[in-house]
Each structure stands twice: as C-alpha cells, then as structure tokens.
Length: 202
Image (cartoon, helix red, strand yellow):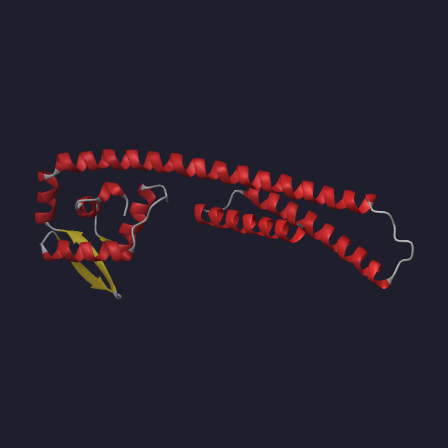
C-alpha cells in the first residue's frame, strides 16, 4: 500500500469516498486507481477487510443485491469525517504530492525504456551491418558444396529475420501502448535476447 495510507488513513479516505454516495468495493478500488492516475490501485484484500471493520464500528452499512454488497456511510461515519476534517485535508495534500512523485517516476521510467529501446535498435542495426559486411568480405569458397549452399540460405534467413525483428521493435516502441509493467518485461526480454546472441557469437 502506498505510504500516504499508512496509520489507518485509508479507512478515513474510504469514508470520504462513501460520503459522495453508496458504492461497492470494486467501485472504491477504481476510484482510488483514478485518483492515483492509474499508478496505484489497492487490492480487494486491502479494501474489503477495512469496509468490514468500518461496518463493525457502525460507520458504514451495506445492502446486498445480485450477490454484490453496496456500502453506504452512516450518520456516525459522517460525524467522524467532520471531526477529522483537518486530517482529511492533510491526507488530500499528501495524496496530491504522492501522485506528482509517482507521475515523475513513471515519466523517468518511460524515458529510460525509450532510451534502452533506441540503444537496442542501434545495436541490432549495427549487428545486421556487420553480418552483411562479413558476408560480403568473405572470399567465395573454391568449390561450393551442399553445406555451403545451406549456410548461405541460413545467413539470408538470419538477415531477413534480424531486419524484421528490428523493424518490429521500432514499431512497438513508437506505438507507446505499453504499460509500465509491460515495458519492464520487454526490456528484460530484449536484454536477454541480446545477451544470448552475444554469447553465441563469441
């Protein structure tokens, strides 16, 4: 859980969200995710136990329909919000600061990922050039054999796949549709593939 919700502050914020109107648990999760610009979302295992405790304390109540519980704040819950208005205002300020920090961090990660993708693209392009240069500079064998023909076919296939791979990586990077988790995974996959090729070609 993000640090702004330590020491029972999530409990207070749930009351604040319910003060705007009745909601079920997943609505509260989505509202929190929206508040943090999609950079943080509590799990159901975080939200529902707190709602149950709030209900046990008489601060919220629930109605059930279609297998789903909808929670509503009680008069006692509203009274607690009024009593803790200053604490809620401080919490809102902390949330705003946390969102700004998370947005900055996400921007830095995206910038680093774009740089890594550009570096990988340059390395793949250079590897393609070197492969072609090596083939062009290699003297032709005096007597071609079936094995030589197979090697030439494999080298052609390698070149084509490398060029297609480079183009596809560039296209995906330019689309900018990755989530942060997908970008981190993509970097690991690309780094692993490059390391594997380096070991193979030593």
